[in-house]
Image (cartoon, rainbow, N blue to C red):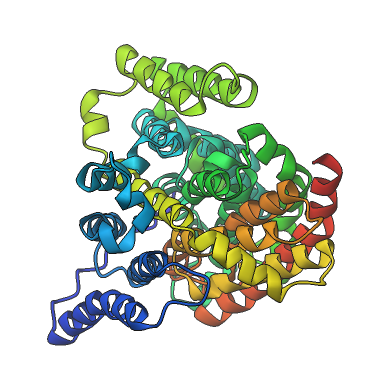
Length: 503
């Protein structure tokens, strides 16, 4: 390898007065929004406590969008506020009038209800799988093997990056971790081998193409597998709590399969046409990958065990869901990894990302459940259904999907988007006579990954690749619009008919 890409480390910005003012403003904004909504008269047909709950919920969503504090802190704050003031925010007068009702106990039970949700534990378990990939370096080995055999040509190198993400996606619930922890560190070493430098006209030699293929692949695989994106698992819980429909790992996979396979096959080629690299062939990359693989040595015992364990988990998720809860299957595999030494207990206790996501999603599940239990979701469904009365089920499905997809421009977090909009759109859809709710739910949830391509802030890996220095702002927005539109059209033209036929 002639040259190794140097990872640029951005120094923390100094705590300027302007930065402090912005942070204070972002901290005050969620409170302001919640207070303003609390002062708005309760809409007709809705109980005051339900409207008050919604006001706090919107404040939480605003906090998740601007993130003056970590998402877990925002969610926990919302849960605590509602639990403390549950008399006015959570329970109806009839509930509180019941002889055996104990407000303090009922409030606490609601506040921690999300921590007992199986989907939240499945998310946590998948993070532990990702920790195993990182610790054993099996994910890095997999990517390097593909680069070694497909890296001579720029086009096949694009396919190598795509396949690496595809192989890691089912076992990595965070596309940010998958991209930032495995894919990006490897491909960041490749452009310099071609004389392609960041923030330089030479970026277009190949670096720009590789970075765009990588972020696009991350979005496609995030839609392809239930376990490839953390908000997918949150969406699963919201669908079940809102409309009572259960979506299994296999159902999700089959629903997106033909569209996912098509996108995986054509995306690197499409990027090659629309954003072509200047360098087409280079022999240095396979040699570099071979050297890196030689440093890793033979497949280790822990890598083999990890591969066996995650395959077993995948089989249980697909074929044994009626015998073992998917979250319990994940916990079983984690236990096996601990007993065999693939992971150590310190790897679990020290995994800040996993615990942060665990708390964050547990609070969001409780908050979303509260919207339903207070009656706000049913009221919203009636109002939304009235607005769409007279529209055919097929047209309504497409209109609601378009709105759900395009509103992602307003969100810098797929989690915030899912929490804020999915229950509302599902409830509106449920009021439309003749609509196939199974298909409607699958269309919405499988769009969560691919919609992340539309903006430089649309999904977790976006800032990683956008900040690489290889994707200028105008190029990112132009390509995001093109690929976002193509993904949406493909979902409607291919995904919708397929799902209607299958389900």
